[in-house]
Image (tube, rainbow, N blue to C red; front, top):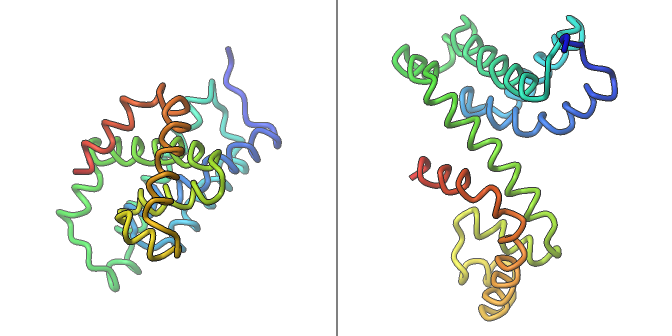
Length: 182
């Protein structure tokens, strides 16, 4: 199969699918969400303008993640950033390593899987799970939302019951992500 540039429909689909996770991914490098958004937009513009050709979807994702990583590192090495930034050469060297890159790609991709699954839950249930993922305790969630502790526990049970079949195929990758974050 010969590599083909993306059609406008495919391009828009990849933009809508990948843009949020690529922004968060870039932000792991530059630690500025607005700059991360600019970096990701620049990569998408370059792909469109240069009519970059791809063999398959895996190649597209790989290209975007690698391009965003490289643009993020270029930004950190740029003269304007060096005058205001506080990152040293050893920190940049760590950010350039394959293990850092792969870990962040896996985390970004896993976050998308979890978010999609959580978004299938009823609104209140999803809100509780999202707060729980952020690290809030049941008591803190109860206080923030103004609902009883028992309601929190019941909603979490419902959520876990519904999420389990949705995430069963992703269990190992999710477990891996939580392991590497600790």
